Length: 129
Image (cartoon, rainbow, N blue to C red; front, top):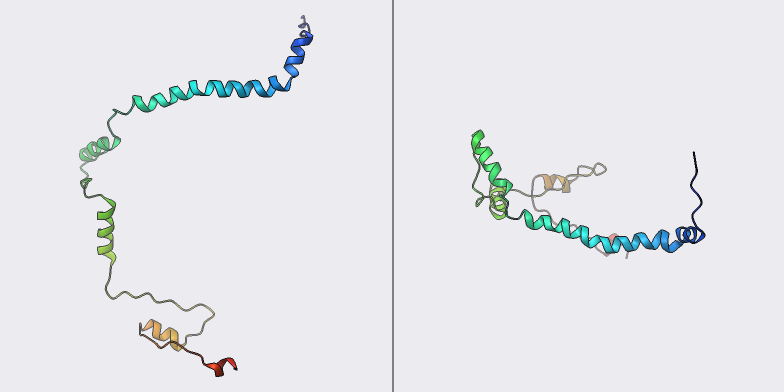
């Protein structure tokens, strides 16, 4: 088996050059990227005339006998209003539950009963002034 002769001195210098090792791949990337991106962007324009997937879903649902609401009813505003009407209650009040380290005081009992209580106001005597 014969081995290959060593490359000429000038070729060895070029292959060891930093410009060849790092610069050439960068230039190839910068020059070649537009050609690749052109083909990838072309896909967007080729498939714009395609039918939407939702039409196929509607046909499949009809074949299975499922009832679907019209898409005009399924707006965010309509769904929000339906949910708000369904779960809104007139006699609802937010009550904070007691913490594990707190005792069952009059404040918590009044909150459970959903009554209004007077705020505790401390005076100068309480602070030792």
